[in-house]
Image 1 (cartoon, rainbow over the protein chains, first blue to last red):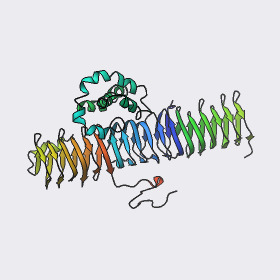
Image 2 (image 1 turned 30 degrees about the horizontal axis):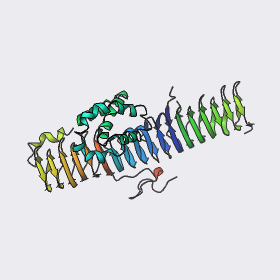
Image 3 (image 1 turned 90 degrees about the vertical axis):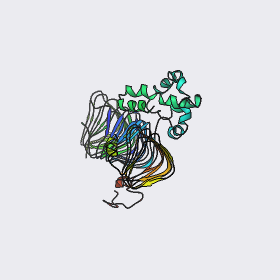
Length: 192
Length: 104
Length: 139
């Protein structure tokens, strides 16, 4: 039945950690850290007092802690977040309130690295992309969930410095459509 | 159905308090205090003291249990700990080690 | 996306526009709205709304305006008296301050957001600023 949907009900309070490989729906109060490989939803009445790590983290309630999304962090209307936010995709709707540092993009420190050397870095990797592509998805795809953050690091270290930005930009498309995220993909294509 | 569900694949380590009923099909370590019914399904692992209105166990539970109404150890259940409730049933096929206290 | 804003641009004489082939280095200030389609290096301080269009790029210490909509690239902080919005193609590096800040899916951003609001008392209320509503009841 509803076996795989974990729900922290409205009057439920958890003092401790929630971990695992499944989706989580918080309608009550979780004081401790949440780290799952599935999606995390914090309902409009949900509250979390610590960090959240999930594939997609969707917040409509209140969170005091960092949000880390392997795929996306989506703050919807009514969300109140005090903490840093990091995910390949971050969307903050009108009516969502945030105090913290926000960083979008793949990998661990892409925005700063990517924003500046772009003009130089972009043309360079282009011809070699076809060589890199078969490797990169293989490295990323098998462990999409918990290790989304750390995973790119070894790949990056192992390759010449010009490539990672291309390699990192590449992998998501193969992964993302499998999870039926058409929107993100289209946007990415447009950007390039 | 249950308002709070700890699904398969999820582990909660800590203390849970709730006014609602709770369904556990995953793993809970710590302590659980519920005002309504608690169900520990087959395949679930609970290592916690449990206080609730009633408790039905088909999975594995290690800890002391206090229920206002009843505790049912169903076939397949594996329970280690003391059980205190007005009514206690232990089904054929349930494993149990501990004390039963039925005088509330 | 920013169509609602850009449509009346020709009619509105108070809207300034920096076209796509224009490159400005220096400070821009004024009363009305501003649409940037080109490239600006320098601070921008206007009373009206600012739109940084897709394909445009701005690098500045700080941008001051009322409403700010960004679909292009910005390196620098934004201090808005109205809402700030990053459209899907935006690439922004800097801190954003405004009455409301929204980031569309697909925008790339790194920087701080600093909204004024209170957390629920269960989460410790507000670390700074005054706590309203239920006050010190923290159970």
